[in-house]
Each structure stands twice: as structure tokens, then as C-alpha cells.
Length: 182
Image (cartoon, rainbow, N blue to C red; front, side, top):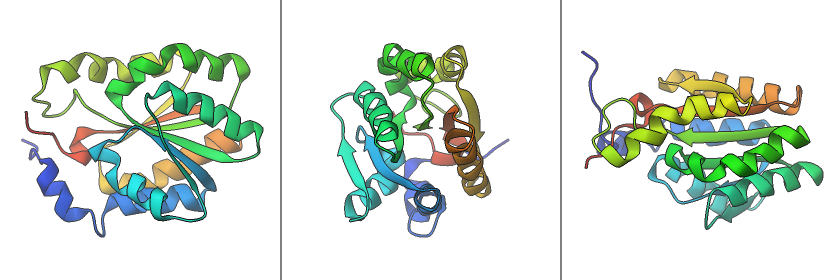
């Protein structure tokens, strides 16, 4: 049986772990705009984007604002990423039709809830629907379950987004980020 890790277990891995590699891979692939609603699963990327003087770090009041920011960034010649929790995806569905209809290249990284080891019943619905919702919007969906998959997956997603003009959602599984206690 797979070991169930908690957020505390993952906090010990943060200083040299996959979360720093995720940020570094996004930056190496040219991302200069990070938008987010605060989330523990994205804490390192958020904190590093705030500290990085070469990027724009935008705190959102709701996730769909990040969709509009990403489209605007593209129109202005910049590369962006929307960092959100899977539960925030439900807030974005109508705005994501703009990505599809406008054929915008779009990258989002979702910290998953409602999958491996979830203890909060309120997170189950959207967590279980996230992949299907993204696929219904014609997004390419890539999933990361192990630390060693982070960099190659972000590199692959970046190629798909900025070289092929696709919309890509990268799902960071709870096997990777850890299950929150409830």
C-alpha cells in the first residue's frame, strides 16, 4: 500500500525539493507572470514569484481573473501561468471558454484535492471532476505523481503551450503534494 504523506511531511522537502524545481522550470521556460489565489500546495512558487524582481506576481481575488490575465499576457508578448487548487477550477469554467474560443496558449498548474488520501468531503466533487472538466474544454491534461516527473512535465507542457499554441493543465497529484488533514 502506498504511504500517505501529509503536508507536514512535504514541508520538510520544500527547501530542496520538487516545488523549487517547479518554479525553476517555469522560469527557464520563460514564464514572467504568475497569478494565483493563495494555496499551500503552491506556496513555494508563490513566495519565489513575489521575491523574484524579474516577474510579475499577481494575487487574485478569484481564479477566473487569472484566465483573463493569462490571455492578456499572451497578447502583450509575455508567458504566464495560473496557479490554483483544483477546487478553483470550477470558478473558471466560463472564462476558460475564452481560451478555447480565442485559441490562446494557456498554462495552468493545479494542486489537486479530492484524490489520493483526501479527508475533506467538500473537496471530493471538483477534485474528481477536474480532469474531465479540463478535457471538456479541450485542454491537454498532464499529471505529476512523483517528484522526478515535475521538470519533464513542465518542460513538455511549456512546449505544448508556447510552441504548439495549446491549452495545458498540469495536475499536481495529492500523491505528490500530500493530503491535507481535515
